[in-house]
Length: 254
Image 1: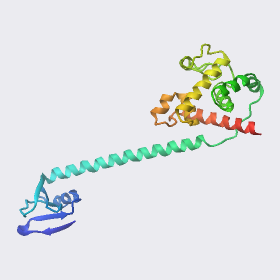
Image 2 (image 1 turned 120 degrees about the vertical axis):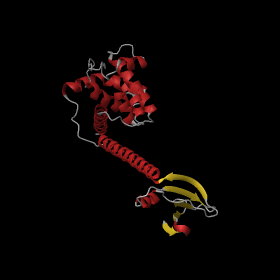
Image 3 (image 1 turned 45 degrees about the vertical axis):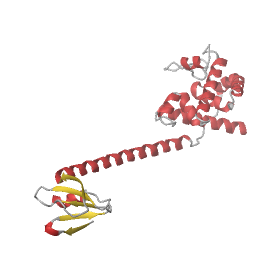
Image 4 (image 1 turned 90 degrees about the vertical axis):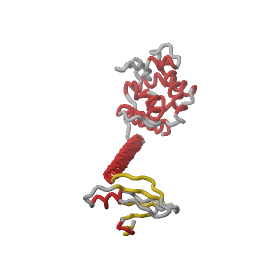
């Protein structure tokens, strides 16, 4: 922007159409006398700001404001820009933290093998697990990993929230997937397998999201934009099941 002395001592600041009016306010602020600010546009689209009326031919007055008002508007605009930038920075930070959490979920760690009494229980229910996996198009290793995480293969497991049996079905989920006897191991495994199949179909076979939905409900996953909800319990659950799943896969391959 350039300043030009005009006829009659009128000060005029002119620029292309993108002139920032705050520059004029800064200049006027040095003048102890309160002033008005005039904005003009000529036939070529050039913008002119002045602290006095301009009478040049071809200039069209767009608005007239006091310098105080214009300065206040610019302060408001600056504050709005700062707020928006702070919001963007907060979203970027949240996304970065979420990506770090996802990366941690995928980090493979050593898992103790199934042994002792848990191995006895696993062997007892393995035929039911294999059968349910085939019916629902699942790998048996996934059901094993979920059952190990949920109940350690204990058919009478009951959580403080009321989840029941091997796959820790909530009564509402059991009813939803036509489980009439929630404590029956065969029906419990069948209902859990059906729910996992539903979740995998819902989330395009993204196993992380399916597991998050199994723990927190599919509605929670959707509310967070099809991401693992930021619940420590759910994030730890997904991480734990994946570790058991990888251990199952490695055991079967060996």
